[in-house]
Length: 282
Image 1 (spheres, rainbow, N blue to C red):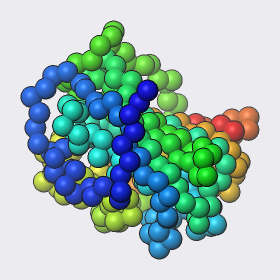
Image 2: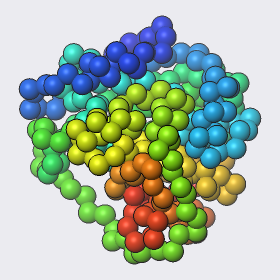
Image 3: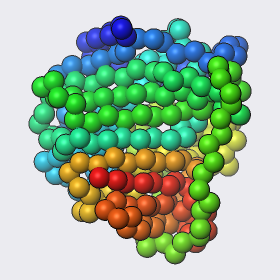
């Protein structure tokens, strides 16, 4: 049985990120075996309104599913800041994200949030690890999500995997979005994610980017917000993060009906290449 550690307050992200920046000589990918949990958490409506403004959602009585990921994210950082974790969240690549909304979550509902790490496996470029989050209210599961990270250069048990993705056919964007240089700071404010590659040219160049890149979860949220009025009350969404988006920049968005769901992509401004691919299913 997985041990559960109950936290008294939301972990501070600054110190956790500082720990995550400390280099590790470990070659084997390891993660803690326990779950971390916050109970009866109240949502900050002012922050939620700011989040909706930055990501394109409409402020409603119910919250976007990507907002619930934001509330769980400090537990991601806290868990991988544990001394038993050799995988560092800073420097790891967020490759996929899946989430399921089992029912709409209201703004005023107190939330129980839990996160655990697991499913460490080999990849041709390193090791993959899943951070599994759940949100419950009054004992009922209302949302769950899995964030998969690639720790490049690390080892993990098993045969290396490199799942093939469907070829991307160029599309004509239905919309184009201009992203200002300040967007990384705006999303940092509403998400609490202080990773400097999103706001600092020096840090971005240190990780191989010509300019700061926008958070993948902003791109995810913005794509989902574009479909907001067409989404059912219960659905799952799968996202592959294909190519980082540099700031400032212009990107395209395309969506196609998929028999009750949606296949969507955030692309280069001409629609030739994807930055993100998304599947929404009831």
